[in-house]
Image (cartoon, rainbow, N blue to C red; front, side, top):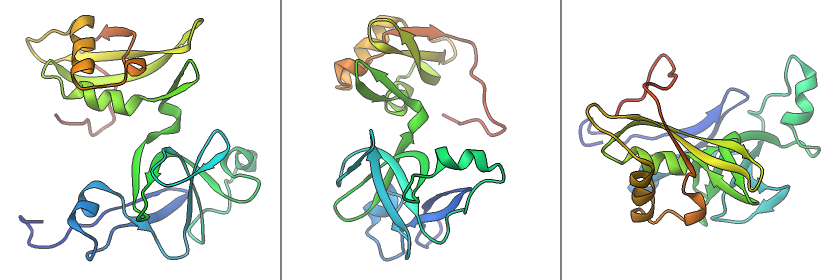
Length: 202
């Protein structure tokens, strides 16, 4: 904002449902910087987890409905999974709606690891590990586990001339006050992770 001398605004949408939320130039700076705005006029939004509609400040899958939502897919067999019986579109995005109605996208539902019945956000762990100076890139995935259902595995690309051990990773997670049940139980070091055409830059 300082560089351009103008307010910057952002929002959240997806191919099937563009422009669901938007911040405005009149919103406070902290809302512009840390949220994806509030629902646009005519847009309904709710947070759902385990088939329960959640209240403010609870994380879950965002369901949306309104005039901007697609009527369905060309392959209509996909509609039953994409839409609820009462017409809400399941976005697959995880988010939180605060008490003022601002929406914050926190991850993807498919990136949730379910360990002993607890939902763990892979993105939360990735963001934390990415802050470690020895980590150049990271992906956290869920692997099948007979005892816990799934276990979290961190796949790490180390920075040049750096190394990361399992104990290093655990110590970093603990120092960052990550809940113990979210700490990955496995670490794999690789040379590179698959990237899109525009890889993330550190």
